[in-house]
Amino acid sequence: MSDANLDALRRGDLAGARELRLTGLGLREFPPEILGLADTLEVLDLGGNALTDLPAGIACLRRLKILFLSGNPMRRLPPALGGLPALSQLGARGCGTEEVPGEALPPALRWLTLTGNAIATMPEELGKRPALQKLMLAGNHLSALPEALAGAANLELIRLSANRLEALPPWLAALPRLAWIAWAGNPLDPLAPGLDAADIPWSALEPAEILGQGASGLVRRATWRAGEGPRPVALKLFKGAMTSDGLPEREMEACLRAGAHPNLPGALGRLKDHPEGLHGLVMPLLPETWRPLAGPPSPDSCSRDAYDPALRLLPDAALRLARATAAAAAHLHARGLLHGDLYAHNTLWDGEKGEAVLSDFGAASRLPPGAAGIPWQRVEVRAWGILLGEILDRCPPLSADPALRALARRCTAPDPAARALMQDALHALGD
Image (tube, rainbow, N blue to C red; front, side, top):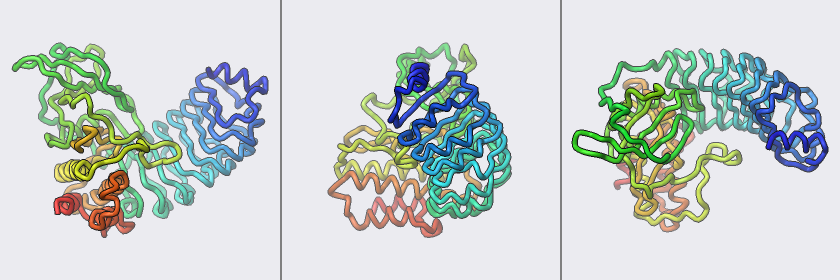
């Protein structure tokens, strides 16, 4: 398809195009014909090529909103990117990037993905992009964050896993809109000693169809030939590669550390002796009718989930969903864990009554002990408060309930110190 797109571009057949994808073609030079789409082009994907730089003339793409450069060998993020006036989403993961010039950050930047590079420092200009909302920096060489980022008033999601951070700056937890964060795999959060968990040999499992697939791996239905007889289970096999959230082995550790809870998926044991050496977890099998409460964020929504416009919740179901997610998060906090990705798209529910579990520990991190962990708990309380508001929006009988709306406002307060802790929010729901 991309070859056909390149041919059509060179023939001039794509006049007026709003989207263009030229991926995996081995391009070593930026096709100049792209500049002829300056009046209309909004989305450009050049991933998987061999580009090392971009021409200054790219600034003529004044309508370009989304640009993907992942997989191109760009040691230095091209300064020409800063000249794109409308560019709000930039993805350049796995490019071997070492240097990010301040002038390479476009003025309208909202969503920046630089996962899996070799970046040691980020420029102070990062904190001077007022629209910045989502920042993906997992798998780099960062030992500090730019102090100017303390002024990023709209930053809601940040991924810092698998870097070289010895500590997190205290101003990070004080950002007024921050709700989702991950930092596992840094020196400040090393891999813990082995957890007690059953080892389940591959030979005792009969894998069946794929139930789902995410950034860290895929989930299959399986039969576990356990001592008490065959048992249907879910088997999650990890790819073993860096994801936008962090490292798969940290996801496994968090899932095991979380322990058993009715609103968490749980883990029955670790997989051993896989023929290809893959890591995996064996988990209880949820009913096949359960599904995510929403879809993941879109380029337009950035840090907000995409719901089915037709979704309407009955009051009992809405309250059960709110309680289930609050109880899951409160349990994790008590176990010294931050989920990091508390979202509707990670909430699996029965589709009717509101029974639910909070899934996907790919962004989980260990909380600092004692009082030092409380500011980070309050960051996640904001994520739950946003989710509560979204649930209420889809339940007309409860949408204007003053007590519930007040709870949602308290949990999303711009001053993190004014937010409830998760256990308090759960008690408020009970009242």
